[in-house]
Image 1 (spheres, rainbow, N blue to C red):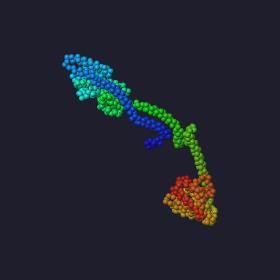
Image 2 (cartoon, rainbow, N blue to C red):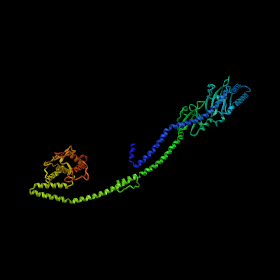
Image 3 (cartoon, rainbow, N blue to C red):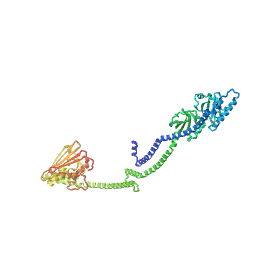
Image 4 (spheres, rainbow, N blue to C red):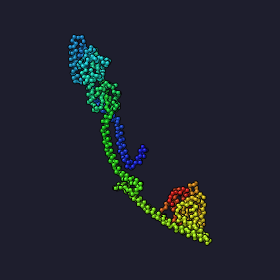
Length: 603
């Protein structure tokens, strides 16, 4: 997930928008499709099972009707008085009688006439009545089958264990009617014991063509792949649409009343079982799972697919709109790449007044402004180079001036005026340091020398009696400081520190601390200032300097104490600290904390 997020953040805005649109539209639709299939699965299975059960219930009604005919025929033969009399007389015929064939034929005719009233109205059945004396009655030709062969069947003995109200359901077996083996290969048979009054028991065997049940199956086979079976409790098939399956066994629990999902012929099927009346047989349906769920879910799935189609069309339209909306941003990206490679003349071709167009126009205007500023800087740089050339050409004048001053100083010194020569030397040194701007930083020793010359000239000019005391450690004397930063401080101490006839003493002390900064202290014993004046001074000094800063009470070179503080801040940044303390009548103290590692600012 984190990898995908990183990949998306590296894509363009257009691609991120398009991917977001696709995800926001397709994810809900896919989720709806999956959730719909998942949560409706049980409901659809239940509906399919109910539908299959309804089909089996209707088939069972048809089978019950068939079995009703069988049971009605069986009960009629068992309990009808006239029928019992006929059966009794048929059983009493002696096999050694001379008129046995006539008597049997007569009884056949009477029994047939008695049964014809009901059998003509019922489903065709094969009826066999078998007596102990090996006489029998059948409604089919003995040429097709000799009913005495029933006694050889393994199930026949089970009839003796039945009472006269029980029925033995034999199930499906090969037809014993020879003439119909090709047409109707299977029969479904029941057997009973019947007994007339004061006589021994006889046997009743009734058989039904399995094809009659198959007809019911075909009527309800809406899906050709659906399977219907009539089985016993163990799953042995008695009837099926495929005759070859009769006699085989289903490998499932057919007596389970709930529907089951089973594997049949390597495919999932929905299996439903339903009981059959009169017997312990079961009706079983096997419907392909995909077919039954698919048919019921077809409307829902079609609806979702149609909805998905419309969403895809909407998505295509939305992507086209996103591409159109982000086209100016793409152009903006192309222009910025061109500018990055040095083409400052590149511009965004935009029309209109929408937000993105306004952004493009603003960007173009910014580029125009930058291009104009670059041109102006080029002009200024050219002018600056010309001015520097002119200054180099004019440097002969200051050198000539210094040489003349030195010559005058030597002449005055030779004439014996040592004090005048010293003043001219101080003036010459101060002018040289003022005019020379080659070095931005100088050792602290040189800066203090300038200060000494300046104090000497100030004492001469204004008749001050200023005493300068310097106490600098050896390590601090070689410390590099900004050139000419102490002169404005000393000037303020002289001008603003004068107090009546008191002799002004200025002390300068410097030492290193922990090899991280130098502490420089400038203090005087002048008149000082009250608390209100001190706060006003601090507010003025520590505020950012402006272009229209008043130059009242300017120092020697036009740089005030405020400018000194701002200059030191530009050079050293926040590492530079300055503190001002003053007491009225006692003097003023300035403390500088100058970092040993000077900044990289242009001074």
